[in-house]
Image (cartoon, rainbow, N blue to C red; front, top):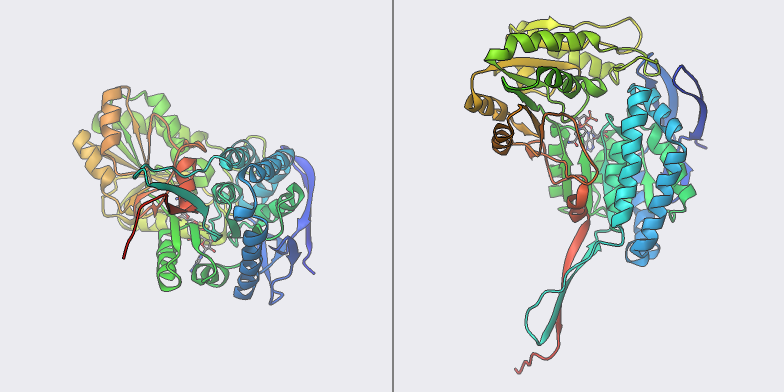
Length: 502
Ligand code: NAD
């Protein structure tokens, strides 16, 4: 029998209890994985194991597909009107709201993000996302297309069937809701694999999904490793679509698996190395604050983090001075600390990876302007770090570090800024700071990125699409755009009187 995770939070920012099942969730029931093995879950603030959860296997994916197919045919999909799906999704959002603090605390414990940000951004946005798509559930319609008077021609937007969701660890619950929202609104059933590093809120959500009254098999959650459970999802012939959020490296594997199996439909939300262009007419105080938010929020573990900072030559020194003040003011500490802004990195592996990049930057001749060191001896805390004196072909300029590390680079004029900003294999996001609106708009129109920001960074809304150009992805999350990835469009031709004589 799967165990229960019970934890009592007694912290300066939150006190309360949580207790939930840690089994894999298939057909509305928690169970052990078919091999009865477990996965250790760590607290990144201490490096200690806090939970052991059931580990899924490819055999469990077979069981989940069976349950999801049955639910699709009998109680969901075309069998459940959109208005009813909407009611259930709104019930789920209300339950999430009731447990907002608890969900935020689990997320902070599991992933190391501060309770403050977890509560006020991640969980609030996750709840809003489910509500936003609940509103769409009875509004996804086809069209009547005029052809000839002798025909009725229309389209239906039918749910695809069983869809697989594989997600990253940096926004566990939010990414889960970005996927569940459009998939459920359009009538698909789901098999979701959370990251093996941060599976706890996904499991807590299963209890809320059951309590909201979703029929068994509509949402199945199978935690496990990428090369077993993730691989089984991407190769399974009973799964007709996979929506993936993670690294570009694994995104390629997902695409290969889709091609080699049943040519399943895929959406890929991948990595980034986003530029932030700060022109000489920018409001420097505003630019320095947003630039720091753009690099260091969520410990720099943000796919759209604007970590390549391009600053116009005339204000470079002044900006550097101001930006350095901001970095010094970032309070790195216990995720539940009252004044913590920045928690630990998510794992030993990520911590080591980031430190290796910092070493590579030094080895290649860049200068650590500030930071670069570990903080304390327990957990994975590190200093916000800024490099200067870089060259365009350095690893720290080209590759996604996925940690609190930025590079500051000088540019001469608009053309130079745009050329350097677009010199990347990625194209997820880009920011521009200027007080000149014409310059802002001209620049963002020339940037090769799926999301562009003027005088802000890391700003998203559930009704605005998010996704990448180039190797940052295929398809879009959020907004009406995401709904298109979850339906098959069927054209219906009804002959009202066209003769055919053979
Ligand atoms: P990752 O690619 O290592 O893992 C992502 C997920 O894929 C995990 O659940 C993992 O278990 C699974 N996985 C690993 N190998 C697999 C395989 N062979 N087959 C199927 N699944 C497999 O990424 P990560 O370290 O969890 O997350 C960080 C990355 O995610 C960064 O590159 C970041 O930019 C990206 N990300 C992108 C977005 C976006 O919306 N574009 C959002 C968040 C994170």
